[in-house]
Image 1 (cartoon, rainbow, N blue to C red):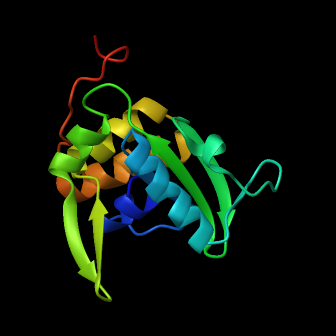
Image 2: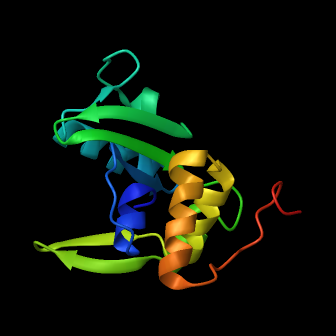
Length: 145
């Protein structure tokens, strides 16, 4: 998980309107995303369409409405925001016999810095810095280089 639920995991309790999931590239991930979308009765938020495999394969971003709320499904970009880097440093929690993976503080800070919206991103960064002290900053291509 990235986004609001990762912010909450890292100590800043706030409301969030959706869940943000980062998924890897490839046909296995596409199949897993399709299984997930079917289980949660997902439809594309923009037009209410039930998604088929061709709507999911290789798509960088999907925003769906599900039986559990809105979910943003994203694929990583360049390091340090690619799936492999984020997954390698993710923190794992067991909850109700499920394994949940949250972006590390460094990954979360990188996502928030890249999005850079006044609210919630910059606000989240200020709150996280008040909790954790100086935040870890990983250079982001195009932003810092």
